[in-house]
Amino acid sequence: MTRLLIFLISVFAASAAYANETRWLLQTSVFTSHHNPKPEHNNDQKLVGLEYTRENDWVVGGASFLNSFSQRSAYVYTGRHFDFGPGPVFAKVTGGLMHGYRGEYRDKIPLNHLGVAPAIIPAVGVRGQYVSSELSFLGAAAVMITTGLQF
Image 1 (tube, rainbow, N blue to C red):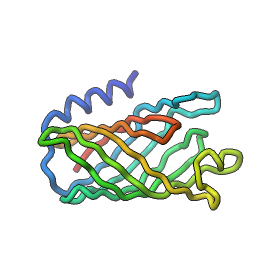
Image 2 (image 1 turned 90 degrees about the horizontal axis):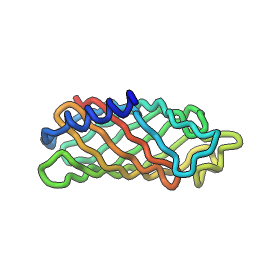
Image 3 (image 1 turned 30 degrees about the vertical axis):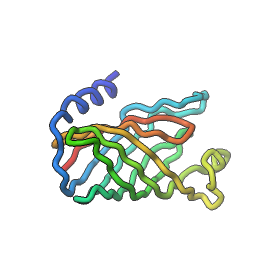
Image 4 (image 1 turned 135 degrees about the horizontal axis):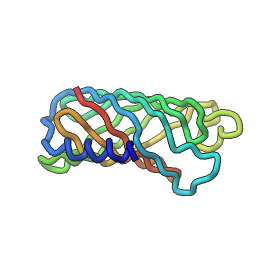
């Protein structure tokens, strides 16, 4: 419930449109839901991410998180923001490399033969002057809501 409240506060605080300029985003996960939940699934990713967005809306970043099986994992990526007019709503697509699915869970993400797998993560979000929140689509497995501070 606390995480949902944090998300809602972030959404309402994002009502002011954010000018296109370079910015950093420090974010964390507040909610995760698996489409086909299993007892071994972890819905508390403890994600910490840092992202840099350039004036032209290209983005680079990285995140550390607990994957669906509570293994510490990482995602490094590049991508792009797409604004929906002058308002605070945007879409984002990132692509990069994911590491951390090991042992019996190694094959839970495609192409993880060497312990590192390519990943593409689309998201929709809202941003204000100081906060941003996103709904990320994690393949066929789950959705995750993140929120963070922009500076």
